[in-house]
Length: 205
Image (cartoon, rainbow, N blue to C red; front, side):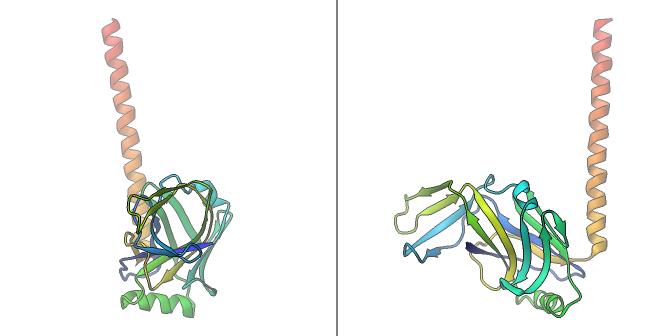
């Protein structure tokens, strides 16, 4: 199992913690392989992880990868933690629990003391290495075999992500706008198809 951390920009709102645990096709900061005793950089490929893998996994959101400090959980697609594979990365969100850990994390986010999201994973067999920089080669992870937990931590291995707290009301409003936009686009497409059929019929007649 390997652990990677992502530098995050936190915003203080009310009840939701959200952000990206993984950013696709972004180069990490310099990492160190203890077994092979070498430095390297890493890229997670867009195809490395699928929604099917997410939905068949037991993923916990922790503080500092401490299993005793659980904030949310998604087990086989069900639970308090939402995890989605999007075009630019793996997005997560959950309602902040009314617990000492939840309240502590919210306060540390407000004070910009926690600015990093981390993920624990095991890679698959498909890894490509680029040794053009011999001192610090870059490996591209083409497949991830398991995603075990996401975590709010202090130090970053990656520097591209967004994570914030926001209210449930804002979340619902954003989802409503997205649905309205999708409906509007669907209606426009249907109208264009209808106009095209009319034009085709007029040419035939």
